[in-house]
Length: 95
Image (tube, rainbow, N blue to C red; front, top):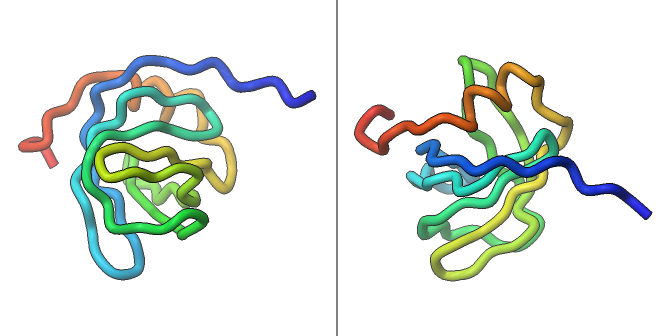
């Protein structure tokens, strides 16, 4: 059985990019292997998405999607530093 990574609450605003367009979302929780977000994103299950943290592009795929929320599984785990940054609070207007 696969053990789930420790999840941490977050209020980090990011620009989540699909091939078609960027979308502003708020990360509600994050782990080294993925995140959950709030916001409207026109994406389908399994679609590749990207965002930046500390100037580095993080790539993942949509694991769950609804009209107002979703989840992303990262292609590779993020670093402890990136995780610590994403556990902070960042307003949409700071993007």
